[in-house]
Length: 79
Image 1: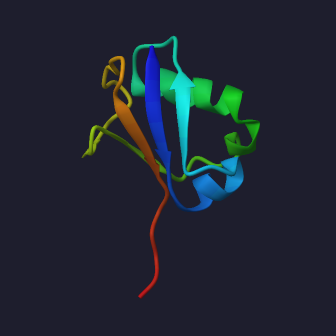
Image 2: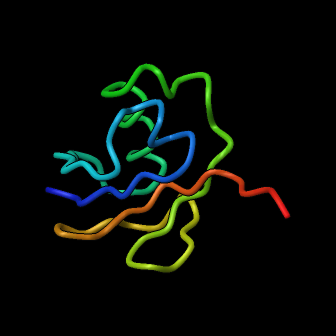
């Protein structure tokens, strides 16, 4: 399946893009995270982010569907 992946903050900086199209062979958010780390090794040591699917926060067992929009959201700080 193909996913649209939106990248924010440090994750965008590490990958060098704001958005990528990602071919995904798994079924869950947990599977997505594993494939993401394989495709982008620079993320292997960075796991301080949450995943949102179609604008709603997702847990690791949520099933992903073709054409879902997945956002990788790092922690936000500031004032």
